[in-house]
Image: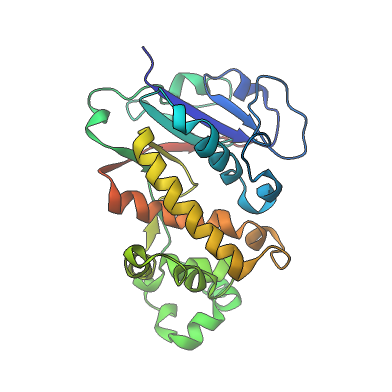
Amino acid sequence: MKNLDIYCVTDKKLDFLEKTNLKLVGVGKEKFSEKYLKCDTKKNIYHKEKYYSELAFHYWYWQNILPNEKQDWIGFCQKRRFWINPEKDQNLITPENLNEFLLSEIDDKLSKSESFICSPVNLTGVKKMKMIKRGWKNLIKDPNIFFNNQKHTIALHFDMHHGYNNLNKAINLLDSENKRDFFDFVNNKTYFNPHIMCISRPDILEKWFKSLFSWLERCESEFGFNNLKGYDTQRLYAYLAERYLSYWFQKYTKFREIPWTVIQI
């Protein structure tokens, strides 16, 4: 019997997605058929979707489905990014055969872990011109960033792409149990596990969502919504969650990094 359900959030109707065994979730302006779950009913934050991205569904799932969840394992992915069976060669994947490569169950070998997060992305080797254009405030504080790849941290990357000092402001709103550890994590790590994608057991997801959304609610008092403009800043809460996920599952669970793939659409 299948022991894993994976929810895939999309803002577009895509034929190849409808041919998979993923549980599809429709968000955004497009009209979706009954094949797709919606997250604008019951207890929800759908009015924040353009700022929270797929987290609007994650919140809805946490509030309305998770309390009565019967499945052993639950996962989340996106319209372009998917969990891949570690035993298969992802170089052979196409939109048409995607379902054959998707992770579909947690076998005995995988079940030795408590959670699964995406294999990491490396942040080192930022191009010099990009550093000057986007990271000049960081360079003023520490010119060695320009020459030392080990200073190309999560915090630097966030400052360059999602608003200078926004991550620090958000960290200051974390609870005392996580504030120092998360600060150290983002200022020392040169990689992170991306995409707000995870797989875990319902009891662990309950703890994760409680920690995440209580923090993001406090962040709203700092950043609000009116000044969040442009692709890299409008979804600030999603980008904060992405970095926090990497930290949280590493700290609180017996995690494993597993492959994921991108389908160009």
